[in-house]
Each structure stands twice: as structure tokens, then as C-alpha cells.
Length: 337
Image 1 (tube, helix red, strand yellow):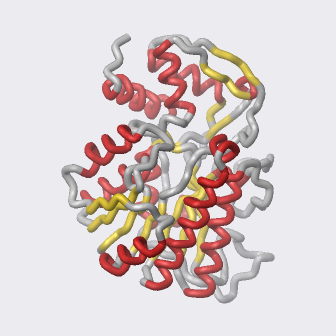
Image 2: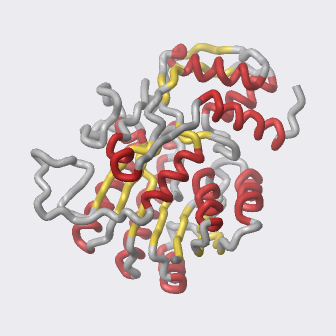
């Protein structure tokens, strides 16, 4: 089976491509290797994760519709896992156009390619950020998500609506995954656990937003990859009897499904920092500041339907996960303390 993965030089994409390749799937990986963060880290990911595999890597931007359709025509993927996107909540405030080009136009191009060259299953990255200002926790896929607090979140919510439209009109089975704070070795430098580690090691103050009164549902990369792989053969089916008054709003009369994919165990920001300090062996210099635009106070995933459907059982604790990340960071950056 040919599986197309977009964003293959990214954190989740590289891990997923390697694992699927080891399970004898034919992987076509796309990535434009942009400079949103350190290009060398992306290139090293590709070398580390894909060099000894049979992954076909294509340096390609999903916003180029004609080139994308040529790739679909040539490789005829049965499954598409769309992870390419402009990430980052705060960056969406500084550079909104990047999110329109990648997250909106890019996703439209993927949907159009799946329509012209039919696939058995399109799995795509949504985000826990769609819950925006919601206060009821844990966040359920049955909750309303009409109050985003960042443009990034708005684009991800839009992707879910676009996917439903194509599922309905053209019968494309689509599954959207609302990721909750994915972390681990080879992660993204713009994420707090990564930048905190760098600053603590270098003796720089870390910014503790909202004076530490925040919670995040940190989810280790291996648990995320396992969940995605289990979902590949579970393409959603249309339910012509679907009734919004009684049925889950994460499903539909179209072949469409939305899942939360998170650890289901939120951690306070201060607990997270304390654990990181222990793993590094050095205390952080803390600069307590107010909440930043686009941030949310808490993320907390209700994953009951994912447990029901694929027996999803994330089993990596924050202590174990951060330990593995710090070990990788010290080795990768040749840090001696």
C-alpha cells in the first residue's frame, strides 16, 4: 500500500514515516523544509529517521496544486496522512498570511487531489487549539468549538469543516486528529519544553506565562504515532441515520470522524517545570509574566472514543517522556553539565 505523508520532515511526520516503513508500507513523504524553525534540525530528522528506510522523499510544498496532483497521479496513494501545516499559536499573530497559504490553501489542494485521485482514507492534523476559550474539561469532541482565540486555531477548525464538505460531496473518508501538546526527542524548538530546556541549560530566564497557572495535556510522540497507525485501516463510514440530537457531533451522515488524541492527564506548568529541572539537574531562573494573546489556560483531552475504537492507551508519563527528551537534547547539542 502506498501511503502519502505530508510534513514528513516534521516532528510527527518523521517518526510516523519511519515506523510505517518498518512495517513494510511504501511511504511517499512530502515536505518543503521551510525555515519556520532550524532547517538543520529538519534535515537531521530526515537523515536520522529516513536514511535507512525505503521512504521516497519529495521536497514539495502542498500549496503548489499542480505539482501535488502530479505526485498523486504518479504514486496513487491509498492513504494520505496530512501533517504539513504552518504551526504555532503566537506566530499566527505575527504572520497570518503564512497560515492562509499553508493551512487553508494547502489543505484545499490535498482535498482536491484526494477527489481527483480517490483515496481510501484521509487522516489530517487538527489541533487541541480549536477548543479556544472553552472552560468545561476534559475537552470532548462533542463540545462546541466556535470560539477560537488564535488564527492558527481558526484554520484548524476550518480544515475540519472543509473535510466534512468533501466527505459529504465526494465520499472521501476523512479523520481529523486534534493533537494535544505532542513532545519528545527531535521535537519542535518553538515548543515550551524545548525552549525551556535550552534556557535552563544556558542559564537564561524562562518565561512562565500566566504566572504558572496553566495546564497542558502533554502527549509523548510514541503514543501519538501508535494511535495514528491504528487508525489507518479504520476509515469512517457514512451513517445515513445520523441525528445531531442524539448522535456524536464528531461523526456525521458523511464518512467523517474527529478524534482527540492526547494523554488524558493534564500537567500543571509548575509541575512540568519542576520535572524538567530534575531531569536537567539545574534550577530554572523564572520570569513570571501575564497570559499571552492566543494562549489558553488549560488543555485536557477526553479520549474515550479513541479508547473505544482502537484501544488507545497512552502510557508514557511526563517524568519518563521529559527524561528521554533531555537525554536526546544533551546528546544532540553536545551538552555537558
